[in-house]
Image 1 (cartoon, rainbow, N blue to C red):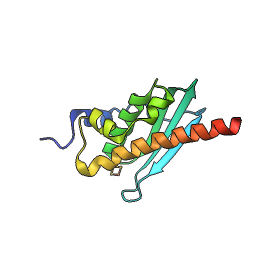
Image 2 (cartoon, rainbow, N blue to C red; image 1 turned 90 degrees about the vertical axis):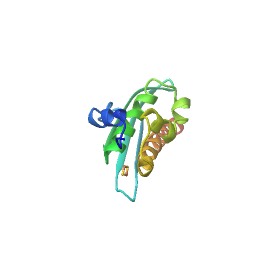
Image 3 (tube, helix red, strand yellow; image 1 turned 60 degrees about the vertical axis):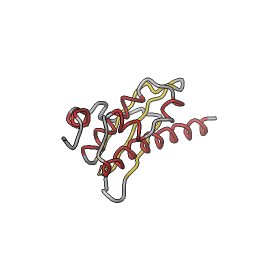
Image 4 (cartoon, helix red, strand yellow; image 1 turned 30 degrees about the vertical axis):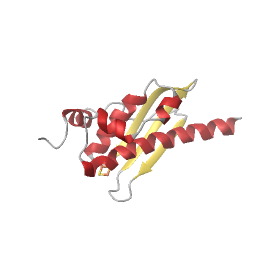
Length: 127
Ligand code: FES
């Protein structure tokens, strides 16, 4: 059996939503101290809906595939729904990841939560 699913390979080779959003109103950056991988997430949120999302990942193939899939899963969704996204759901959507690569999907969940936190913080400051 191949170590990585076709979906993982597809999202690794052709990652969706790579890049930077200049006028993002939620930005999150997380890293994993053990492997040294870093993920940065940019959100453009309007009326509590994620209008656009982009990411930059300096990391392994699974981290790139996880970020790509995670951005696809929250794009166009309300903030409340994006908050519920779990790394397990991302891994499932990729048709699974090897056990020792699960932490790569955790990074995607954390990056999105961190960007959503940043969005909330900015909103509070505006009030
Ligand atoms: Fe660390 Fe993949 S090996 S994020």
